Amino acid sequence: MFTGIVEEAGSVLAVMRRGKGWSLEVEVGSIVVGIKIGDSVAVNGCCLTVTEVRGKTVVFDLLDETKEKTNLQSAQVGSRVNLESSLRADGKVGGHFVTGHIDGTARVSKWGRSGEDWELEAEVPEGLERYLVPKGCVAIDGISLTIGRVEGRKFNVWIIPHTYEVTTLRDRKVGDKVNLECDLLAKYVERMSEVKS
Image 1 (spheres, one colour):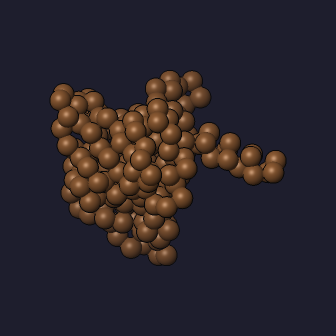
Image 2 (cartoon, rainbow, N blue to C red):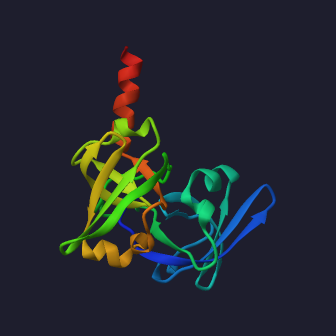
């Protein structure tokens, strides 16, 4: 479980085929303190397990499905990825509850400066728009954000300067894919409504 408050952006050192899956090596900063094999870390919002720690290099295993269904499919040497350690039981929830299970990728349709802030608009795959609610929660590349407006399959979020500076959103451009995790509560409510019917 995570909160969508990104701790830092790491740099991809390698993406290699390993057995039936993939190995992702990331150079990290202070997040490495206390990290150990078996820990969960959100990488661009994807919950991945640490399989190796070598100094400031942290290694994760990726399943084919994870690589194919997230924007980690385009990760290459030098790419930056958002990183967040898993939530401790005594930790502070500064964003919203994020599981690290990506619902799909959204395509950036608008991205630019708006006054002192930035505005990002994205289009979700068909079917995910039902989870988008103005003023609701969404995680984009693991970042907890508040939805502004919703128009069909498109929605927007506002990015404050701090978020722009400490995350990989500043690397994004129109046409890029971003990982999307919709609000967990909305999915539970939907499921419970189906069961009652």
